[in-house]
Image 1 (cartoon, rainbow, N blue to C red):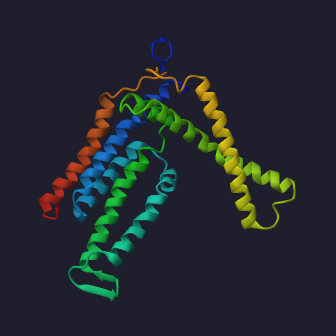
Image 2 (cartoon, rainbow, N blue to C red; image 1 turned 60 degrees about the horizontal axis):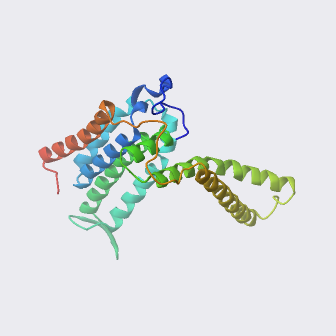
Length: 267
């Protein structure tokens, strides 16, 4: 891998100090496994109590990540938009039960659909919040190291995905450069829809050319060679990683225990 860090078998190269502090030093694979385990715990039941307890515990642990509120709000905005949309659809089309509040053909609102919508909305938020927050500052190279070395995913697939993620950051710059080039030639003043379609096609062609060049460069450097490959940094799953998984699993188990104790658990 090309990112800086500890090289296997090369003494004298060490990880920078800011990479070994706090939650950011935890291998991203641990966060991935922990979030998956938490999601499994939360989908075992559709009650309000378990999802609410998990969400409260996550809110209490969130300051440990030291993420600026504005950054967290921007990154979680897709989840915040999906939550009300999910709730509205379940309110209108969920399984009817209890007192009926509104009925218009296929759309009906009852006590049961309202409760189910609230439980689902809280559950989506409880799963989506840690899934986003834990990966706000993740280095894609660290994640690729963990996926290949710890989860034993195919190296060619992991490296190809890593290269694609690295190239994604160039699309915005390419779009701005295309726009400035068209304005300099005087062809960007009218026809906004046509201009957008033509620029999107030009961006696609540019991305394909860059992908081809990158594939040839990676192949020439031995990224597709058969046999066991070496890694610049060794991905380890030690105490901090187990602690991360334990905390997330603990949040799920505590929420289940509280729901069972309150009598709201519905398997």
